[in-house]
Image 1 (cartoon, rainbow, N blue to C red):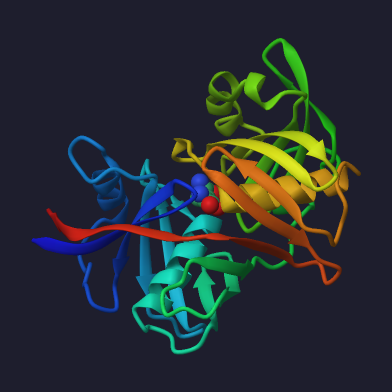
Image 2 (image 1 turned 45 degrees about the vertical axis):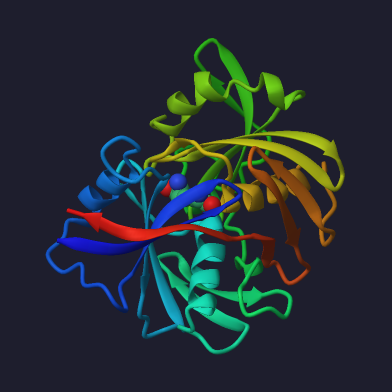
Length: 283
Ligand SMILES: N[C@@H](CCC[C@H](N)C(=O)O)C(=O)O
């Protein structure tokens, strides 16, 4: 069996995209397929798998699977790439349209005037800040902002944000010295997060600029995480380290995203989306 695929990335966060308007995946175990296509030696190589699907509630739908086969509810870089794919391949006929995710519908806008999308803005909707919305175990039911977080023999301070998926944000003095490989795999599996968590280390450059590194739930270190960048900006604002309603430039390993937590409580993300490979995956 051959499956037509497109490999796309947002700032180096790459996924294999399958257009299920055209390709039937009936009978396929999608979790197994995600692991297969993501393997750089025996598959294509990616941070996971994203399906572009018909939707009854929106103009187009998205389902995403991490490299380890787990299904995530949303994906910021994936949303920009789905928007680009839908626009470039005329699945939609307007420059603004909606995308259904398992975390709800979002709206996308293709910037510029060209017939091929390069920059995309996504209205990611509101951040979810209550403990049970993350979800994170604990006694205080309110927001988790700069809360002590013992791990091993040290105590970090956590700010937790859900963008439809869970993020644990830790501010550090120097991003180059952040314990990403040491603590990322430990915190992501910590029992205080019943659904696991994406782990972000963030250095504040100034009120409008953050340096960022991520250990993603289900995929490990990636070059970029769109929902993580949104969570980092929201966390910086909650800690009074950045300004609300102003653009915040988040510097990720793969490049920059512009995030704005606006007065209407929506988080806006703007950045690039790229297509790199098209082909047939042989199962
Ligand atoms: N890379 C993504 C997030 C992908 C899902 C995440 N690992 C999860 O399981 O929640 C992004 O760009 O947001």
